[in-house]
Length: 550
Image (tube, rainbow, N blue to C red; front, side, top):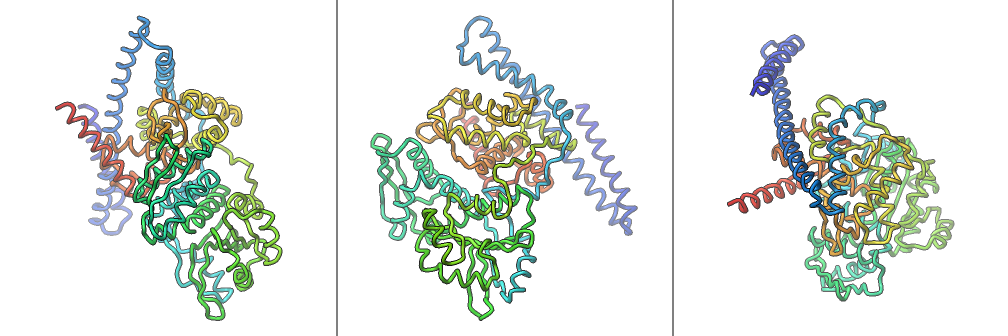
C-alpha cells in the first residue's frame, strides 16, 4: 500500500515536472502545460503498470519457492525419482542465478548491440515499403532511362507466406516429394497422396511437419497422415494466390529473405525493389523479380522453378538495358545441376544458380565471408528495460540476445546431424558444450541456456513423433518446428510476448510498450494477428481453469 501511495505521488510529480519544463520550451503556456502534463502522466502510468506486473511476478516467484520446498521435503525422504532429482537441481540453480543474474549482467555489459533498425532478418515480416521509399534505387533506374511504375509493398499476409517459403527453401531436398505432388494437383484441387514408405526418417519428419503447418494455415483443404502405412493424404486449396505461391512465388520469397538477412547482418548499405513494374527506354513494360542497390552497385535477381529456357534469352537482353554487369546479374533456378548452370551462364552472360548455392555465390560476389562470425556483444539496458527483463527473468525466460542466435544455430546443427529421437536433456547438454567451446565465454551457463530452452518450449518448437509440440524437458524430441534459425527466433519472441500478455492482455496496445519490448528482447514485434492469437489462447486457458474450478 505504501509503495502504491509513493508511486502515485511520484507519477503526479513527474507529470507536473515535465509539464513545467515543456511550458518553458513551447511558446504557448497553455499548450506547453497540456503537452507536458500528458507526457508526464503517460510516463507515470507506465511506471505504475510495470510496477504492477513486477509485483505479480514476485507473487509467482514466491509460489515457485513454496513448490520447491515441498519437493525438497520429498527428496529428503527419498520420495523422488532420479530424473525428477535432475530437474529439481536445475530449477534450484536457475533460481539462484535469478537472484544474482542482474548484477552479473551489469558487470559484463561493455558493448552496445547494433541498433534494431539495422536488423531486418526477421523471416515472418518482409521489411516495410510503406514508410521508406527506396528513392536511391528509383533514381538509379531513372538514370538508365527506366521508369518505375509500381512495386510490391508489404502485406499482413507476408508473415505466413514467408514462413512457408523458408521451410520449402531450407528443406527442399527432404520435402520435394510432397511438394511436387502438391504442385501437380494445384490447378484442379484434387485429392492426392504421398507414399513415404521408402523415405528416410528426416524426409518423413519434414514432410509431415510441413503438411501439418499447411493445414493449420489453410493452404490445404484436407490433410491426414497415416503413420502405420507412412502415407500422406491431402487436398490443396483452389485459390489463385496459393497456386501462385507454390508454382514459383515461394522461391522468390526465399531468395529475397536470405539475401536481405545477409546484407543486414553484415551491415551493408542497401535498398531493394520487389516485383517492380518498369517501363523500358523503348516504351515496353517489364516486371523484375528482385532488384537491389548495394553500396551504389546494382544487383539483379530473377527466380524460376521451371521452364527457364523460354526466358533466358530475353533476360540476357534486359540485362544490357538495365546496365547491370554480368557479375551482378543472377537467375536462381530450382534444382538445376551446377554443371549445366555454369554452361548456360557462359552463353547468356547471366550467372545461373540453384537454391543450394545462390547465397554463397552472392556473398562471395559482395566480398562477404559467410563463415565469419559477427562479434557477440552483451547489450546494455536502460533502467526501464531492466524492469522488463526482471519480469522475463521471473518467468524463467530471460531474452539473452547476446547468446540466443548462437544457441539456435547450434540447436539446428544438432538436429541436422544427430540420430533421432533424442532426449531433450541430452540436446541441452550438446548445445551447451558447443556454444561454450565455440564462444569461449565463461559467463555462459546452463541456467542461461535453460531460459532460452524455456522460450523454445513455450513457443512449441520441439515436436514429438506425431509432430505435436512437447512442453517438458522429460520428453523425447523427434524434430524441430523448423530448422531455420530466423523462424525459431520468432517463436522465442512470441514466447516473451506471452509472458506480458498473461499479466496484462492490453499491455501492447501502447506503441511505447511495443518499442520498449523490441529494445529489451532485441527482436522485431510481430503482426497484429499474432498478438491476437496469443490473447485468445490466454483467454481460453483462463476459461478452462475457471470451468474446472466450478
